[in-house]
Length: 254
Image 1 (cartoon, one colour):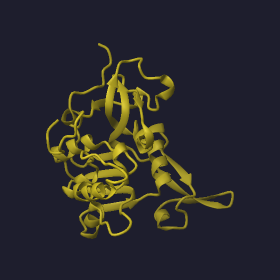
Image 2 (cartoon, one colour):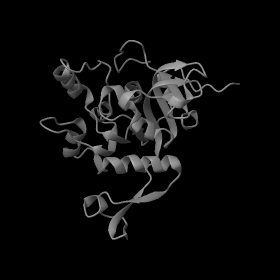
Image 3 (tube, one colour):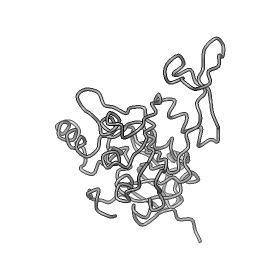
Image 4 (cartoon, helix red, strand yellow):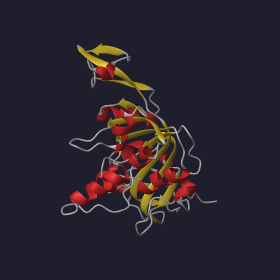
């Protein structure tokens, strides 16, 4: 039987996500990089006590609507932008391993509010260190030394060694149970091509979990992707699911 990693629906794609799972959620901060429909499917499944690993804590439904309205004159944001803030709002998250758990200015993100209320835990990780911890997990590297965070609270409880007269902090690889990522195109083997800034944490997280699920705009025939443009080889991807052509509400099964 030929390899075919394309699954029929988002609900099927996340069907084995369980309570207490560690989710690596791709994206940098904007709607074009976010695996929105996979996140929506996790919200519908209503699994609890999740640990989310992401660059940003997520805006959630209410703040996303406000950002959409404010930016409308300069940057149209689609109505189907659902990020990990949705999971936080619904009380499904127990812990966040994040680079940006809060937003600047007057915004109070769902995760920050939950943290102030004592409902979630946070592990703050410098952005480059977060990316490298995830990359190390994919590469099978148990841990590495980095100068980032030495002499700060980031180093508390961790081994610190000196190399060439400079202190380095030992950071452990960060492996997930599931990576939820967003790409532009895929073939049925799971080879992925990205567009724009979606190549950031999405590509890094592919293969860094036991199961990697890719949300894509389009699936093409094998051989149609230019090999020079494939960023994530299919060996790192377990499932592929195609986004709907028209925006759909997050609570609608699909």
